[in-house]
Length: 384
Image (cartoon, rainbow, N blue to C red; front, top):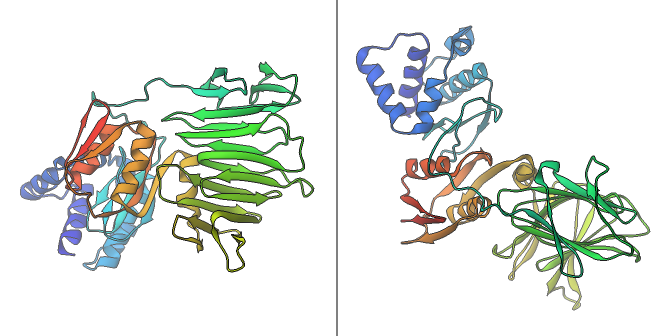
């Protein structure tokens, strides 16, 4: 508490150029303790320092107003604020984390600053792949962002460039590598956004009475409405039945659960392994703002955190009281790295948001700043 208020007071004096020599040294030492802190402090510009009447009116020695004061600093900087519980906060290239303060700062991802490092681990050059039913494949351009299939023609979204002409309906599969997202528009107009490390199987034309697709990984669906022809998504341990709606499915094979989150409309999620009393497969109906979580042991409905479930589609990581192991799996999947634990898995929970555009060395700085010893060698992250 005292540390929180003291940091706030130093920031205030820094803004007004009232720091004594010893206080300036303390603030400099704090900034130098973490590259993220230093980056934030160096970018407190004149437009932030102007018009601080509101700031002064909030200057009192209690926790609530201290947090509000920090929020005022943030507002003057054009920074997005989200308040979290005082745990370890995830930070990015343009993020200030006031550890133990309970305030999270994240500068807009369009901020012009660049983070340079020789430790950057990028994808190995893998491309998004369209695989045909005969086993042949086409490398897709990621600059176009997606493909559409209509009347037997496969083309890039927003162009007339035909990639493929199909004489008859056949099964297609999109495979999305690390550090990539891709969109697919199906023959019925349904839009599907695919997250990194996902594969998605679908027909070039829906000829049957049901529109069936298969997902391994994560996808966001905007299903074209057709009451006479239900839309069926097959994923790990479950199937989802809809007629027209918007929802997100996370079904990575390496995760111990499958999560279905409903944004709009209505869906029915049916377990392929868990049965109800009468011996039928258990089925759950979802309303907007609800989600199901399926695992080998349970299949239940919960209130959803829409922002967390769909942050990936907006290009962000989003964690809320997330275990270290779960967080690292998401990070490893995106940056295409392996993870090796040299000792036990850290027990901390993590909360925060980070752009997926940042280099992995920023993530390493965060881990080290959180007291976790981590070292990246080639494409393996060693956690001690």
